[in-house]
Image (cartoon, rainbow, N blue to C red; front, side, top):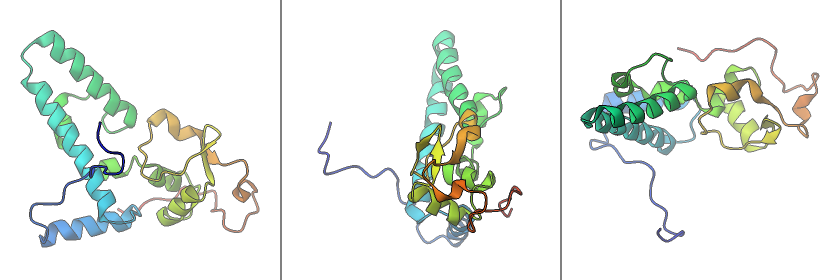
Length: 179
């Protein structure tokens, strides 16, 4: 099980840390999606790496019945997360991008639904307990949200943002992340 004081890292550093193109892309995505630091971005990259590895393992399974079952489980989970369309095939898992994953973060969805003025404001609202999912405060901005959970996001009951006239509450128009 391991020592609880010594937790493992959930990411890997890049093999070539000073590639100009990769660094520019990372910085752009960090700013666009309001990530706190590069470590958060690397965690999402590691999650994608694990998904791709799982897809390659499934492709290597020769037994068709076992393969179909495991493939269906993986694809249904990714479909529920909103990363793949309903009729997706396993090869599409290999083409997932970090930006697609970052669009499914709670912080980004709070901003897109118009509950915050910016992605940075969305992170602050989450950190201070102003956002609720199914009536329960939620404070993790990096949580990946299922598609069916999107409509259940609101301001927390005890939050001053529940009042329509709150000066920091954003307008009712739906914002877009700059592409």
